Image 1 (cartoon, one colour):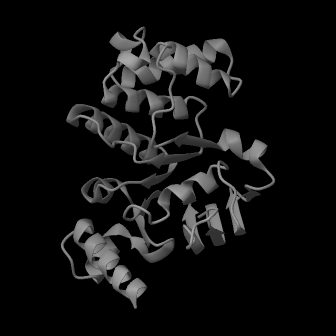
Image 2: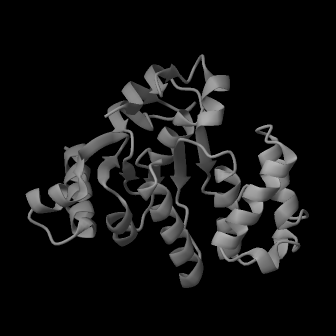
Image 3: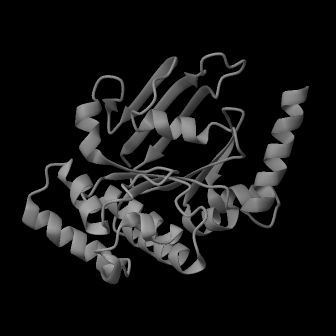
Length: 250
């Protein structure tokens, strides 16, 4: 397998913070994984994702994406990754199609090719009828779907998802999950954060649980559950994070 993400001893402490948000984190993500980076609020998940995407500087360590150092090769890394942030990153006064043309245009896609990709994704997500609506008037679930499409237009090799289904309706959640599963089956490497352990168990092939900026446990999802003698990922999450909290107090 090819290593897509290689993090070595990554540390990040925000200004005036008493403790690091990410504390000497080391992990690897191999090509083709659906990789779940899970943990409670404040575990360091979003900070880690922000570093990987080149959106946040860090204090020490090394971070490689497809062998490229994020500190020095951001221009080469940008076309390789798609990013779906936790907050909706769309212009509310633009229509769905206008938003997608704007974000696709940032990658220099030819107009005809971009049009074709936009129409194809709108069809897959059932959004054709809403293509001319201003994004600000869409439901939360539809905004999440458009947010995902915007990250896929340039066909990245690696997709980052930070809480991609938070606050969405059941129908939109199902569409997003089905499309993510389709992308993964067709070879895309996906890094995903979520508080929803049932969703993570359904989607992820590999899981890393974080707390206080450190790894609590990591492995193939099924193996983690079996080795901990618990019934599901949610029970494992509770067991390991509570144990981590006790160790932190001690």
